[in-house]
Length: 312
Image (cartoon, one colour):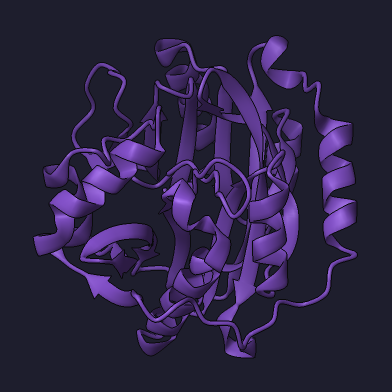
């Protein structure tokens, strides 16, 4: 799900975790996102059912595209979803247009070097409206006027950056509990954090006086060799030192060591701070997902940022 980053602005990130799902068999939707795999004679589908955000997301597919789209329409009706998202391949563009989909964003080289297009379709008139679109356009315009980040800055010496493991799960969950009032995945549960680590997600954190004060993760798709930088959180009193930029850079280095060069992040479109941080770190703007996730008490638009790690 990929995932999202949620911090209250400044260098706060608001990235909800799309890909942070639990794989199970098909079952009635609960508030926890669930990934199901559908294998038919002529197609295969990997689908995330996301009731919290009232949407369905297709993470992978192959086979007969017409039958795939017909099956997805059935799922939308069954689950009463308001938005359907497909991580699509360019060769299926015409079929998506013919069935009422529009591209909202893309991730360069997502599928083992081939671009992924985020095609979406809405099933609610209210879900298709946005009161902040022009304001968000203005934020992007302002960000494009910024200079690159200063790579030489370091936090005070009492801050220590470390890769964390399952032994730190309780401390990580405590951080997320403090930063996130509402989050569609149970990051405040140490057992859930451990499960994400078992599934391949890597975490880095800054410690101050033995306490985790800032953290971020990379959710790795080992098959398609890409990663979403997500689950970023910093305690408010520690936000003036640029810790999040340093964490993201450390995660990038870890990804490169593992042969993963497609990195992307999804930032709350109204957050100047997080979008600016990604831009200054060399990420490229690749579109905006309308009314994509619930943050606090409302749906918000999310910006897509992508970085080719072979260029840094």
